[in-house]
Image (cartoon, rainbow over all chains, first blue to last red; front, top):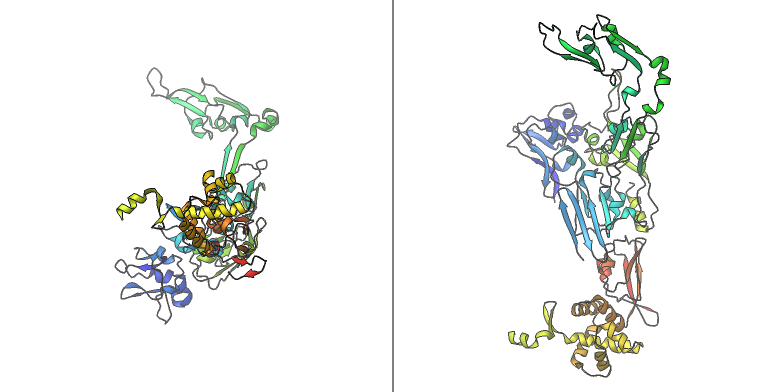
Length: 85
Length: 351
Length: 177
């Protein structure tokens, strides 16, 4: 068991705070560091898709907690998860 | 001979009884999530939880996990921990008191002779390890003068009471009656509070107050030097203290002296840094900050480190999700290391 | 089974989950008695070291009051590997001091014991050694070859694989294992 990213899509409002706040996303995409959702083809950790947040590349996550802090509804969290294989 | 683990709240203890009783104690509150224990452990028994997660989010877990099936209670983690969060006890005695175990040389002391109890260190101390207690002198002994209110002339208007900056004047207010159509029955000056500023004398509309201040002319004669001494006591809780050096830096009379466990270097890649603030929050020494520009138009570094407060623990490096920080330890200040394997282990955490 | 248990009563002990005749202990004590006598210990000393009556020691030395079968079994135990000799003896006697005496007295092998610099001084070998032959010196294990019985339990348990134990020929040459 280790601490990792978990999303709760049922709680998510799709505001995209987490996507923009995430420093890993922001480093990889100039659009995101400018405050927008990504339209360029770049690997981001999570993205709003179909109105709710979805994890795309959680292996890139540095577990800093910035996204969790930015979420107004507690829909993205750092929690105990099973080790990735 | 069996190794057992006990968890109490977020504190952990691992114990093995055999020829000797060995007990490794972890105090979660003191831990800085720097990861040095994980790095040095020769049997990879320690896992440190992600630094950012522990400092920015609510977690039920302890900051570290110790696998009791792997831990051999050698004490390396206890020796390297700059926060005193880990302590190995052998037969009830901490290895910090046993000469054969290397001990980090670090200290924070306040010279009580030089200290003026200004409390700057107490305010600045990041973990709140400093307590300054002080007893202030009697104000009445530091002023000198005379004051008298002519109660016949006084009309009980209360202007002097309202204007007195020391709250030294008090009127006994009452409801006026036809026999006694005054609004106060008495007026008194508390000479222990009065500072002879003479404001009441100047403000009195009927010149009922006679007062003189003797401080400028006769102060040296009237006021004794020993009466102005501030008595106090300074205390630094050695366990809570992180040896950051804030107290030494901020002390106006150089009464605080700090020796740090590590010497080193921190390199920040300002291009990579995205300003997420995780490192700033994680730093137990308040050494990192986002500087504000002094004047409009000035450009500062995105992320700034004050290395004078840094102890090179590496928590910031561990917290950073984009690897923008590099922490190098160039020297570890400790008592002589007699064991070759321990010497190697200490070298290995310099990075 | 029940009937046998009752008639054998106190002469049976349960060890390793198996009922073992207690007289095997007397076999081991017999072997130790003979060896100690050879080394010049007197009957009173032998009695004290092995936890026996002096009269029993006297009987053993005169070849009386002892089951030859149990001596045979004791010999077999003695000639298994040192680890089995040590652990079986301790299981039977349940006394570390007497076990040490018997092993030391009856074991005819000698060992050279080396601890490498990779030793971290964790003390697991000290705890594990039933012969009390290991101490920590400045965070490094030091094994006294006089007491080492070659059971290799410390080698198995060492987390850094820092212990090397080799059997020595009685005339001084090393022998494998």
